[in-house]
Every structure is written in structure tokens, then in C-alpha cells.
Image (cartoon, rainbow, N blue to C red; front, side):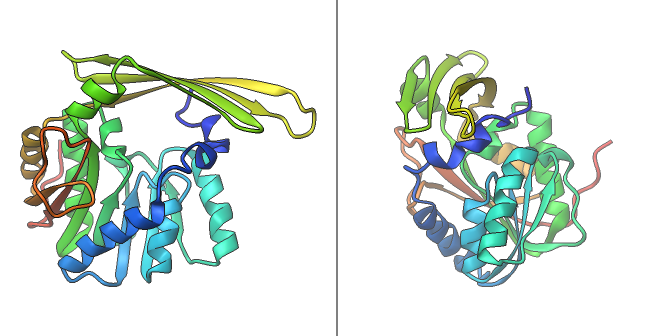
Length: 256
């Protein structure tokens, strides 16, 4: 099943524990650290557009890319309500195309972990490098190996809301560093009052910080910093999420 086809309908309900405004303020602080206070910004893996909308409100000229049409349909409804001039494109991260360059690229909510092959990570980063303005900035976050191993691995989470519920099972293969999410969703049909069952499987890969730095550099980008999430401090052994900052460093050679 295509990722987030059923879950897209209730994604925002079950993700309401995330303070998207605070997360965006942190990203903006990183952008401003490198002098980017406005201009064209791309969000990779924008989902339902929560961060995209916040960045647009802050004055950035936003483009959002996601592989899920269902998620983008919800994002476009938010765009209609807000009146923001956001361009949404349905594309894979490792194959994305833009009409021109941007001042910055951001990717939030562990979207990079969904890219499970190293060569696809490098290809995605090459494209980022190609579409950044000279010395443009790339900011992305990532779930850590610690989080998959100690927090998510082999644990089950469940939640029930008024018109929907979900069961989220995790199976972490420490040797392969692959975390399988088995999602079972029950969503109420507003017309009939009956509940429809959706089942989805998602996969994320855990990457060591040094691995990610090597892939950044292999893509032609220049690695600048990695922080424990929402701080300007170095990652700890117990960090669950980290943020990377890289910079455009000459246009990358197209992969063969």
C-alpha cells in the first residue's frame, strides 16, 4: 500500500502532540544563523504541510514536496484556508525536480530516515546540492539509533480518539538497522457511522551520525554542524533526534 494513504486522513489528529510552531521556530533560528530570513525555501517530505505553513507565515516563499498525494491533498486544503502562496509537488525525494534554485532546503520529522538505502540518501543530497543557491543551507533532522533501539524497538503504542484509533507496532532489526512500523487504523465513515480498517507498513532506517556526515560529504555538500534537537549543543548518547546543517559547495556531478 502507498505510504500514508489511510493514515493521511487522521495524521494531524494523532500527531497533535508535536508543537509544530516550536519546531519551526527552532528551524528558523538555524536559518537565520546563516543569514536566511526570507526567500525561496523547499521542504522535503512536507506531509500535510504543518511546517510548510508555519514557514510561510514567517515570510518564506515555500515549496513542499511529498510522495503521498493524500497528504498533499490535505496540505492544499490548509493552503486554501491560509491563503499562502505555497507550491506543492508530488515527487520522491531522491528524484525531485524544481523550476530553479532555492536559498534553503529543510526536511523535518525524520523524513530522511524513510530513505533506507545509502545510495538513495546520497542521491537525494546531490539533488539538494544542485538546487541550492551558492552556499545555500540544508537543514534536516533524523531519529537516532538510540531512539530506535531503546524507545521504539519492539514496542507497541495504541490510541483511541472519538472517531478513530490506531495500533502502532514496531519491529527493530538492530543488525540491519531497519525499523518496521505496522500501523492498523480504524477510521469512522461520517456517513454510515461504521469504522473502516486500514493496514499500512512503513520502514525507517537508523543511521549513525558519522555515517550521515560521510554521506553529506559524498554528495558534494559541506557538513557544517550536528545538534541535539532544539539546542545548539553536541548530540549525546541518549539523544533521540538530531539536526544536521550542511551547505552547498559547488554543483554536484550528476550520478550515472
